[in-house]
Length: 238
Length: 299
Image (cartoon, rainbow over all chains, first blue to last red; front, side, top):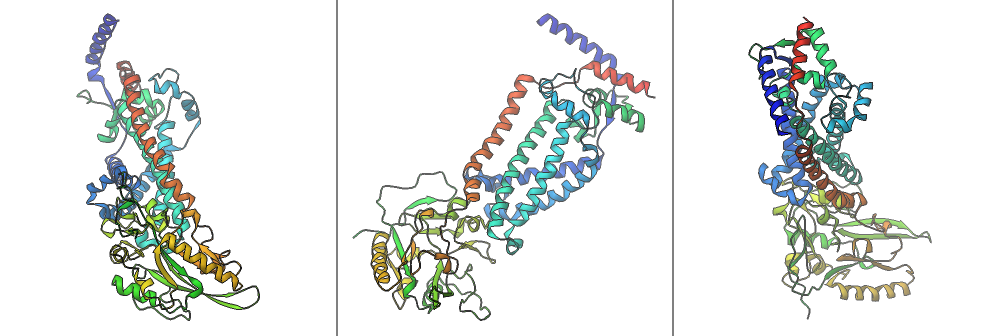
């Protein structure tokens, strides 16, 4: 077993050297898209921390990060407005690419293969797989719910507009949506770490050709055919 | 004589710490005999006076309620109702509204800030404004619509049952000042006894449904009413018939809090264990070669 491993490692090193000059990179996100994404991510993180601080006494200490309970309570809704605006721009940019199609069904049926890193039976996909689309649409719905219910419980400005019973529904909906939203984002973050070569798409804006072939084959060909955005990196990528 | 002046805390909002328990507790209660109230509002004045509150001057819109509602600076309020009874006679029902000091306080249950709402061993539920973050969750938790958030400092206020007076053996200011003795104060036991005597008296005078308002749904209250129509509390300016903490609040602050934290923990732990079992999904070199070949072909 160890001999085989050593062998394949040597082979891999060889092919890597041989192909270093031929490596292809594909651009995936523009600078503006990345900035939009990371502003959203930053606001989401701050909202998650300040929101969880008010959700459970075990996490109340997190209010210290925002300057105490009063400050946390005051800043949270403003951050929420920022997130809603920022996510809205993301939505406009990406909603068309997230329309579900037939490939998504097949992909979801093979979820067992996916979590075992097996790719041989997966359908070729466009820019996004069903999991990514799921993140997109669930966050659209959940952020929508949180924004609306957040306004209902933003007593400083909107107390008079709703009844106490409506506020009770809103505060429950707000925390349920938040928990699911945070859980989905945890999976989103994990997927970016687990699927190697993914984070550079959102940090540097591109992915390797091999990554594109492996995970989004149709998108790779579309890029190659339509925009000629598949290009060689003279310096071997990275 | 039993001591009910203790400021031992038996319940503290958003806290997991064990409160002190070595002293025996004697619960207090304020008994408001609605049938004796003449609506003079002396209790409102006494409350403002003792608690040093001066609400804004309002507008007269032709009703006796003055001010129109409870506020951060009005902790007790006479609510007037003109009720026509079965015999077609007018009854002027006057109820002194304010915090009921529930045994199971919805405000305390809903509060996310440790120690912003406490319940003393004597049963008084008190807001500790210093710890209040102004979120308004107590407003959603209360089944009686009592707490108010101040527009000035964004903190919650309500009747304290004069906890500062009670702590030194004095009756609340409203009880002290009531000219007809409609507001009484003592141990909860004594107040129930007092109420029962009064109820027998009222029943003998034709108020068959006279009774005590000490609602079970919130574990009983430390402000109780003697009502001539205890079967219909809602006729007294919407006094809730069977108050209890809203099921939505119970769900939000009970099961869902545990479910929520567990979900987030499982997502994190699940990810970690997936990584240490399945490992990272790496792009094999063959696929990079394939991409390079395809890129050349597409040129």
